Image (cartoon, rainbow, N blue to C red; front, top):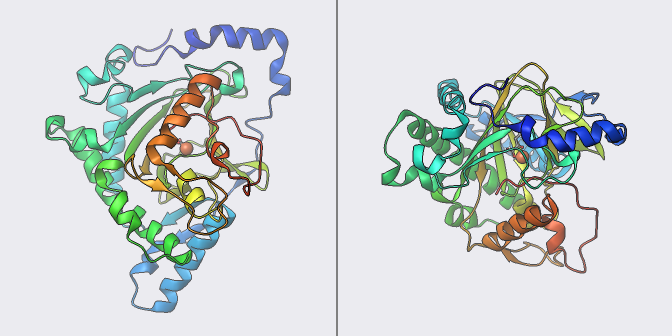
Length: 352
Ligand SMILES: O=C(O)CCC(=O)C(=O)O
Ligand SMILES: [Fe+2]
């Protein structure tokens, strides 16, 4: 029997799962678990604070290279203390271990906007689109409002958010500078109140080789700063192949998102990633999405542009519409210009 805090994933997926078992659809499913493990680039960002310009430049070049070649890398010596990370992790566990009924009424019990609590894949039409997970996707504006009240949870979120936002601004400035833009764009448009925090929980899954924890997707933000626990699960595409990302408790993982790919005109890679489940262990992760306000216009910083201009709000709406209509996000391919090359859209979940 499911624990009272688990969302009813079994019940919701019963029909799709039994159809698959009867039709042997899983034979056509790529092997989720037998994926090679790999250590993604590790960058010591404490060098950015050093007085030696050569050391600072060396670090910036590593960041630039990782964003072009990987789209996902880890930073160590990032200055965010273990206390802050552990503090939020404790609160995260507490909030997920509330009864499902209570979590579903997030606007009543936790003062979050409705729609902040998400579970599974409500629009899935096939087994590949299922996600065995639940999440609180929280606009930071909800936490910063005076009406949010002061409780340990919101205090921990604010503490984490304010620290990682400094790291996000620093990385974004380096990436802008490397594209020849010494601009205040990020400082002006990506504010504390326009960013999002997403807390993920992946309950143990009885069908780990068939069902994703989080279906393949790219992140919508400029960049994501991710902290994951020791339980393996994150995988990314590298050179057309899925590889498993080794957890590192000392690191924060940086993931380039769609907005940076569009802004950099394809130089920085919004990398496709997914999470696989574990049959016995639950897994937690927390993500900070570095985003601008909805009216911010995103346009390529070089010509000819691969993508048509769009506002962040327009992009988010398109993602929501696609998820509603097709069960997955299409993302940047919707905005390609004639110059932009066409490619097959991967199946996506929505993190907007
Ligand atoms: O749980 C993870 O490791 C990744 C989460 C993720 O990709 C997301 O929230 O967008
Ligand atoms: Fe993601």
